[in-house]
Length: 392
Ligand code: NAD
Ligand code: MG
Image (cartoon, rainbow, N blue to C red; front, side):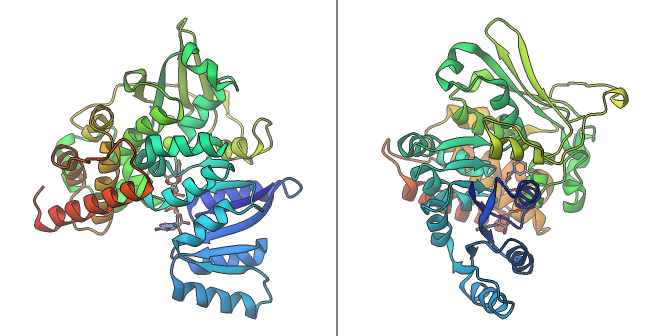
């Protein structure tokens, strides 16, 4: 399988390369990409000798090209977002790991979907923004969409291969959430949380954006929306519950109330290996669950005062088409400002809630990628302005 790893310098990207390295007979890494960490990309190119490397910025791409040439590496270096789409849809690529963070990943995900690839989707924001447009591209392009997000991989692993039977089998699904670092914090103390505290996740090691999303539980909100599209379920049939140990990765409650769950150590290499090997299984590098040392598997309801962001997902899904894209764009801007120390932790929720209440998406029934990108850009500008004016 010739694999393109988009976002190869990130947490999911590195985990994907770790799994690929265990299966050299099976996986050929043909393309890598990075946004800013070009030193890391160069090291990856020297190790993997992919056919292509994509760098967002033209000037940085030139520099990478020079350095690779100097070291005799044959990789062709491409620049810019369009190059990501070209690689994602290239006939010599069989599978695409979509591990860019944020809505920036949408065009390349769509390109892979339209050209019928095996699309391993880590980039949940693309699906939250793209929604029906994205799923239509998957259907029309004949792509095989495999979720990499651990919760959605868990649900996917619990369901039979034949999609057409899902609606009849499933009563509802339950996405588990660790509750992040502030599960037990006094809600009043959350205003003063720092970026480093928010990024200190108790069970998963991840990129900074998704770590903040886990601390606000906006990550689960995005995942509820992601599940709505992946599994074609009405919002009422998607639930979320806190499970602090991160061992049960999610559950399917069947029509007869039988519950199927997928369990394992919290290690993203498991859903990545599953996505790469599906419908088979292969070694992932994850360690085995130590059953004897598991003290408890506990579950609790998310507290609305501590995690108000979670509940915005169902609201966005009930709102006019495009509202989930509004919520996502607002959240990306808010998290960026929070990580830069420019707004407080709870301001993330305030900006998201205000965007959902005040911005009407006005998308037509035939909206396409360009309309979604326009909407995304418009929301970013407005929410950025609210943050700057402290109009929260
Ligand atoms: P990360 O920040 O560690 O890495 C992001 C990658 O995207 C990097 O390679 C970076 O160079 C690239 N990138 C960033 N901005 C870009 C842009 N504008 N254009 C092109 N490339 C860009 O993020 P991550 O934690 O690996 O997460 C990646 C995606 O996977 C996210 O959508 C996240 O929600 C999802 N995800 C991550 C985890 C996890 O455990 N890390 C789990 C589930 C889902
Ligand atoms: Mg997840």
